[in-house]
Length: 472
Ligand code: ADP
Ligand code: ZN
Ligand code: MG
Image 1 (cartoon, rainbow, N blue to C red):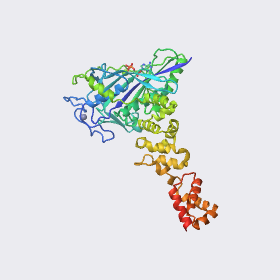
Image 2 (cartoon, rainbow, N blue to C red):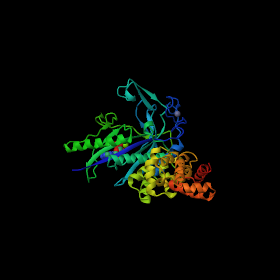
Image 3 (cartoon, protein in one colour):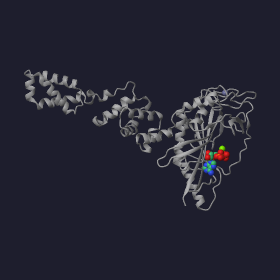
Image 4 (cartoon, rainbow, N blue to C red):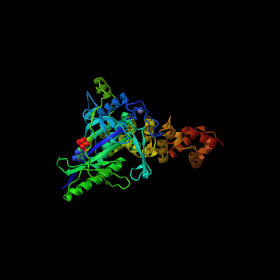
């Protein structure tokens, strides 16, 4: 019997607005603890939240990029729970009337594409950050005490929930990469896992291939990279299959993925049914995004990265993996398209950009595509290290391909000298005639030297060199 993995994701993304969600405190990452706080984000009694308009617009923008319907009316709710990182005792979030719902994201794959349903994308505020002291690597296990840094408290946070439409670890990884790229390209988040500005939980179950039932799922938390997530999912899928094949039942539980051991040991064996006692936030009116605003934001949405991969495959005849690599950043994708439109063969351009160019570490956004196109066109007829040098310099301001490819530099003066000597030695009769006054022979010598270099020398330099030798 074969099994199909079923995976759904819950992703949290920090918006990079200038200020927090409900107060005017500056967003701060890596600053001294508790230096960006005020009575509102510290939850003092009697304070009132004022929503950040930009965070609302950006959430709508993300919703549109994910093909969501934007609510005519959305409500902030209080989600009540007690924890030291939540001074108010509740988080302002969204519940049954979120800003965005019913979307989808296309995830192109090497064989099959996935169309991943987006259940919802809503806006909330992040909690503060608990800092565990005394344990290993800031982990709670073994820590002596816990400090709270309220700088993060109140950061605008978008939560995105997918349908369980992903069916392999690899597909989940590609979805996360595309989603990350989408928010980065929208300019609304830096979505960096190391900074905690992108976090996600993975829900995993398996079912007999061909069935559409949804079996009991487990939830993997604390993933710290896409690669770890893919490995964790694979492990969990194998574990569940093992249980079913042994005649057992999978239990619903939360598994804590430990990147050091690559295990998923249970954190709690039974999922506690949480009761957050959601109720409408009485200090905030419902959000009613005007249609003109939504339509204006819709016009600002760039081509989604998944669609771009698809287009690269068909428009340029690229393999999926090449199209995927070239779309790893919008800057690289744009550079590729501009190099091709400057006349370079699509396949040649993709080879150079993915290999030699990628190895230089040059920032694609800094490159003049027309100059780079000249370098790539010259690839076959210039020495390999000259080619690599040209690529390495291609991000420099005012980069001029001719400086590398132009006649003079292809064969340098120092390399020319022995060639000139050789040509003169091989043509003693003509040298004598020249010296006797047949000046017109200069052109003959120049021609000979140029032939030796395969046409890759600067004729003016050759001229000068020959004259100094002949007239000496
Ligand atoms: P809850 O209300 O308990 O949080 P949801 O229906 O909101 O559950 O689902 C939470 C996440 O779990 C979603 O990303 C969803 O796609 C995923 N999910 C739900 N059921 C399954 C399942 N049987 N297998 C895998 N993932 C699932
Ligand atoms: Zn504040
Ligand atoms: Mg849920």
